[in-house]
Image 1 (tube, protein in one colour):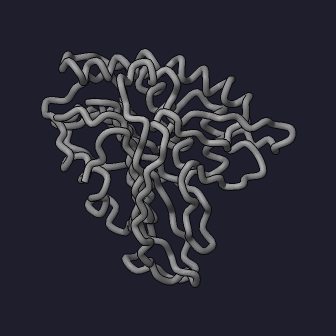
Image 2 (cartoon, rainbow, N blue to C red):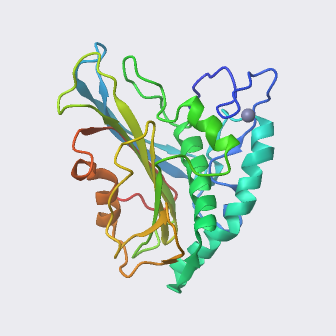
Length: 291
Ligand SMILES: [Zn+2]
């Protein structure tokens, strides 16, 4: 697995030596029990753009594709220390597990469930932990003067310290028309001040990530700085807004989501973030990878 060669735990920041590296599974172990049979292989594909060496132009990164000989449930990051893994992360898993499974069963059966704002906050924080841990298994962003990851150390620390989702984030849930097994698709967005990048300009970044578990898809939006639009304005007929909410919401939405709907939610960001470029699109699946 790619490592960022960090000096310490990605969340608490304690240096290696003081903190011990754990094998934090991106997909929690409890999912294994509920995932059913999955192939012992997974595929990973990626495509994207990066600023060139001078930081002036966006250039294409060649598409890569690889098959790894372990199921997606074994995806591990080594950027997390044992006390984070066994402490707050494990606690968050235990809180989120019954809520996630309630949504997954509802997606399977089509039966309506209600989610309260406090339950939604747990799901959103759990999704953010999963998304950020997942980002750290990928390749660092290749942006001159830019950060290696969309998730900054301060955001990870805040996620650890505060029992709330990160600020100005959003979380949506769809019920897909087909069971696509388990996969994630991650888009890293770079947002500038004008349609053309000006050298020296400070870009803002955000992570738009889909987590699919059979017929449940969660879509998480995490900006690295405030005021980046608050996330995609998705159609409420196909998507249930889980976070932020003020009152109970019911899932699933009226209409099933197709692959096209999922793809549009991830890749049609120009409609709500006109000055955005996607820096990378990475997806990995255990069964089917949407095209
Ligand atoms: Zn730690």
